[in-house]
Image 1 (cartoon, helix red, strand yellow):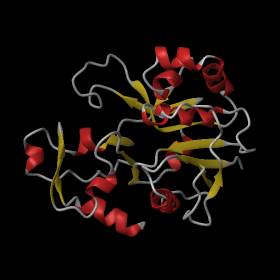
Image 2 (cartoon, rainbow, N blue to C red):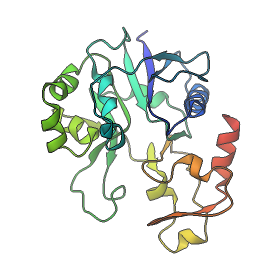
Image 3 (spheres, rainbow, N blue to C red):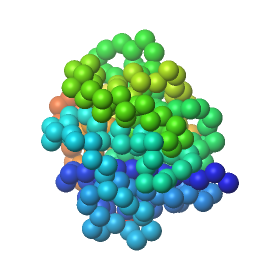
Length: 252
């Protein structure tokens, strides 16, 4: 049997260890076959004992590159990532698991990721899906040139690409988007249009959705246990979000 790795990363103080533990709990509940859950982090205190952890590989990134674009994710493309082998499913920490994850491992592609189109990008037209790196999969060690090209000239990468996911797309000859219903955007697909979002709580993910991506604002923790209105222009969320509260409690 080929190895199966669920990989996530934690750096800085934005996401506490409880975020990693919740993701581990939800992933464990939604995968049927054996897998290894790995977190790359330099802050291991509070992690569940069954989580395998390794230090974040040092890419010699300036502090601002941790805040503007998730450039540390490029470490996943090391030719030898702590000896890990097999199929890797990378999942961002600010992600809600709402369905079975086995299809992500069975999806045949050298590289698969979220394909964000017009429905993910407010205010501009997207002629074809753009790679989003909140959930991606590939065989570990098979795409080392992605990291090598970045390390060869980081200043050029920063100048040409706004973030790491655009850089990844620029390094790949081809990639495949997940089926659209598998991964949805919380604020684009589950929240109501501006105006109605002031009075109606977000929809719950439907039965075909497997992952809810919380990209940008709000993050799950902004909404959990909240009553009334959360707002950060141009987004508003009417709380409580009962299905999110239930998820948080279940995996807490």
